Image (cartoon, rainbow, N blue to C red; front, side, top):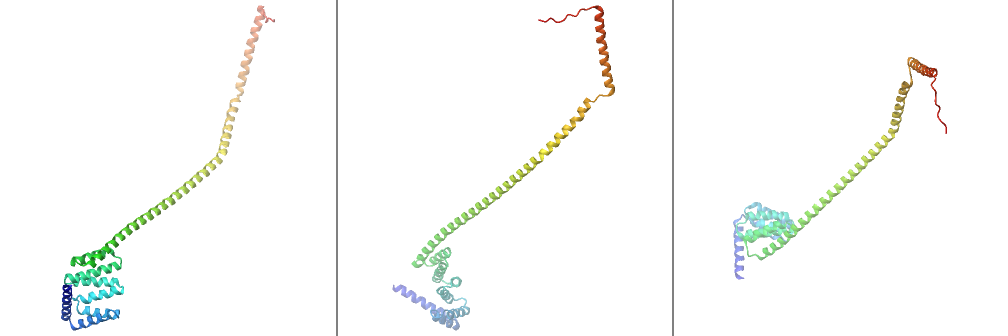
Length: 262
């Protein structure tokens, strides 16, 4: 315990020595900002800024200003100043504190993966800090939960996309069905129109066929005058031949046997 006290006192002496090494303005504004840090945030911030501008290579004003931002809930500003403090840190103790506080700011913004990285960096500079190790465990748990939530969110998003795709497909199917029904209706209308037109065409066809047959019949039944005279003359000659045979039979006395009756 005594060793820790001596170590802390040594750090204080080193800090005082470093402050004394700065300009008088830096010391004035730095001390004024420290005195106002718990009572007046705006004035404390202003004095820290003046001190930082007076000595851009000093860590303390930047580090303390980041703590002021953290306490007031300005976590983005706190992160920005903590990153500056890390760059200005000259030893592992300063780096450890800056990284530890950076992890805390990341946790406030629920940037769990970034907090894990910051706490690990803090432990690399001071592996014996149990508080940093505890915070690292919390950050890892937060990171796992966020990863699970991200996976669930991705699954929900994929389900939503699949649902929208199914709805789109159903809508397309409905449109195709309506188009098919419309085509069927059009085909039915065309068929009815064709059936309506066919009887008239068949009637005209039958009429034409009947009319076409009449001239042939008339043509077949009509004989010329010469043909008629030839037929009459042929019939007259045939009759004369029959009459001649009859007369010849009478002259020879041929008996005609009549058919027997029962």
